[in-house]
Length: 287
Ligand code: NDP
Image (cartoon, rainbow, N blue to C red):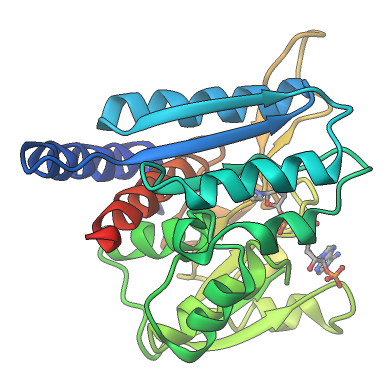
């Protein structure tokens, strides 16, 4: 029986620690403010933005909300970011992605001051991660490191295979595991012999965006399996069923793994907890 890595519990622990930290900083007259920008009214983005605001309010971070119409131009969004970059009261800026077609996401990411880039997407922060300097780290991979450490899982010296090489999950994940002294292999859609490669992993981290793609055949007995994927199961019973699944076939992986993250309740809750962590760090680095 695998240890089930409880992301809900661990993310709550982190939020409670942050709440305490923020309380102490408030007594010293310091306040964190996160500016959250949403362009358009995509319902999924709306849910993410609301969850982020709720987490801010729990921890004691002030959140400023900018809800812009879907017709907003790139220039208008850049102008707002510039204003927030200059505003000393604002410690962190978050632009909810994806953005409407007329706006170039890369340009927007580049425009956010690296000091307020709590998502950790700015090239300066990515570069800092590459050379091992302090900076904001992308929240999902940072959350996975916390899941592993707080579950007592040894990383140093282990063979880690990261499946997926996106800028927000796979690549920073690989760099963080390297920083923790794992031996890291990154796999992607052009990788040959993916199954054999995955079967060599002591720690297998999967972020490919394909429901239940990783079956038992990809997993070495005793491996730690981290599932980043999140999908609404197509064949959930009932038209309104909200059954979620990951990139890993949990039922096949769990009997083989020594530890595994469930979906939901594994990696998902960690992303917001680490965003909150970055907001608190942004405030601390101001002083
Ligand atoms: P992307 O679509 O940006 O990247 C997917 C990666 O997987 C690419 O590098 C791609 O390779 C690789 N890939 C696709 N198919 C295969 C395959 N058959 N074999 C090997 N590699 C493959 O996805 P993200 O990284 O943004 O997200 C991945 C998943 O994680 C999604 O399900 C997403 O919803 C979820 N997610 C969850 C979060 C959370 O908080 N829990 C946060 C962020 C994402 P190539 O580069 O060659 O195309």
